[in-house]
Length: 189
Image (cartoon, rainbow, N blue to C red; front, side, top):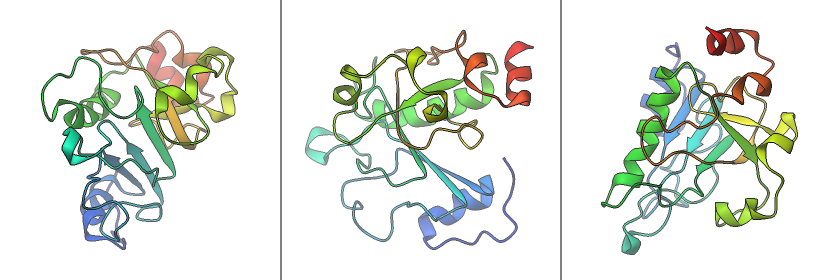
């Protein structure tokens, strides 16, 4: 991650992220209720590449705080994007996006491999009748978190995580997923 020299963004909310992350603008479960559909939420174009991790999408009355709509170049919906496994307290699912991003940076032995799904709504419903990750088209696979910009997958992406750290479940699978040489070297060492 690098600093963006110009920090040229449309929205003040995205300005700080672009200054910190350079050409990539990660959005960690951006606020949904009261912000969805407005011009003050994160959106594609706020940085050269916008990746979004949705972990608590829904409505305030259900104590869900995140944006439900796909708004980035790639939108990840781990475990369906709503309630996260192992989360039983208010705010846990919302904070999980931060934990997943941190793990994607610090856990060099695992990549959060995702698969592209079509449509929107319940993430689980979209993959019930889909082929497994192993059978998926490599070009549609993504990598949630730090490696997302280098992976080929775009659009709406689904993946499953564990209920407690380490959350990543794809350690054995990551090497065959990406053609990026430096990522493979990192995973092997």
